[in-house]
Image 1: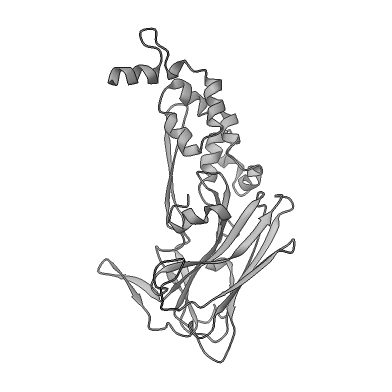
Image 2 (image 1 turned 180 degrees about the horizontal axis):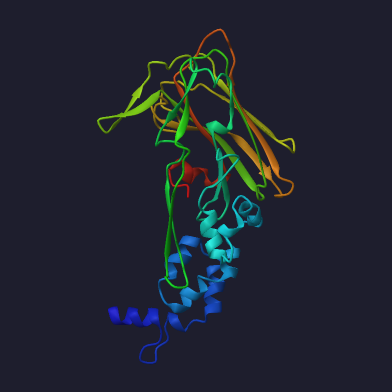
Length: 319
């Protein structure tokens, strides 16, 4: 059986046809319908598959139509003489912009654009007053997901690209009466339907003796009235919703209590029909009822992803 598999993989054996006999152009046509991870796995089979997996026509089909706009965030020497597969691998890693407070990258399975905006890239009422807010360094910032892409290379059949997403700092609210966080991003999003989320955490977390612990000393006021979330776009789209951040019952969509864990609050969706002109998205969350104070909340980031990726994101496998 092993010999037969070897013959099938490498080519004809004893006059029998094998996968190695398939023309490279035919393999490339099949690869057009596969995902990048599937292409890279099949590139291990033989030389014809390896060659097809290096084809610019295959990888250009996986890139967004306006991928050149993403390359503008990088110095030209970073991608000089790069093949399309190398460009895909490059854009699958975070591309920082706006002083490093925002990042964009390609989902490695679909090649679609995702984005995250750090709390440092937002306008937070009272952020300069340490009586109200502090910046907390952390390894828990944002998605914290390892992404590995095996990309076929001319001299080595696979290169390994790994990344870790995150801004490494979050804003922690001790106590305030007027709670308001606003942000804006202007970006040439490719045509798609996108969902915007705020990523929040009730309580201050730390590590003690190697274990994660949460302190809820300052956590109060979030169960009295809901926080209002809003988004609007430059072409007139709007969405809004309200959530009580400190409900003790089980969250229907999260399956766990709201204290002590990161929760992604969906603000709404917006539709982009063309990457030009660039779409401006404004977003906010606020609870400005000054009859009571609130505190004990960590603000990590806002992220924007294609809407049908949200289930994979919720399961922790956004690539």
